[in-house]
Image (cartoon, rainbow, N blue to C red; front, side, top):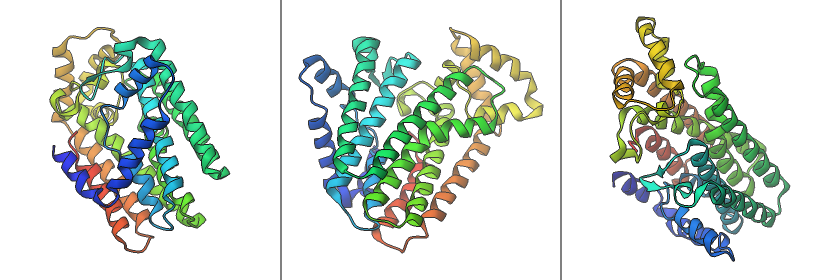
Length: 329
């Protein structure tokens, strides 16, 4: 509830436009097939924080606010984001997301794959209607980069020796690039200068990196009632994230490496084993060091943003950094 209230306050100035994005999404996602409509309505029935839409609109407000084109771009990126989540759930064999059954849990992998593909196809039409080749390239590059990040995640799954460099490459490609595309796309449509476009791209990228680090921290520090999935869920899926990387780098804790590696490669897990590793990571410096990295990227996002003159919209983008760093779900 606190998260919803905080975002409602932050986004009060664009609430009407956010609602129109939601309405247009549903209109554009409508299909002639009942099963596709039913699966689609389920997929969008549990909306997220709408950070990406807000980023697109607010970045567009720092110059000339061309809402009709920003509306199309916002819907396109929301569809892209939802498509990637649907495909992620298939890859992860996830049965729930945000506490609700996944599309693949209800309709199976085949319908889920095609629903994700359907959204990607719809986004192509939305992007074409914007009629700006820079946006065409931004969209295609973003989808390709997300795919690369997902493949890198799969290839490094189960590897207890994952380096910090590879971890940051993975989250930059899979998560942060979409944040960056939203802020950059908003800047392009608003008529921003090349320098301003690159600064908003940097803002979005660093915000996205901070967002994912916090997400990975929450996987160790929160429980299912808070984040909609059990603590240690990344471990269950064989994923090594920043808190665990830092924990494993602590030479005084070397005795856990073999236990972690064994856990990462197992297909079934004992809850006490997961709980033991989660407790070890949270008791050490892994979470603290990860939080420092998140704040460092938050500061880099703020540095890029402060090249723009003060305005109410810049203030919201500034507060959005604090929201990302302090969220607990």
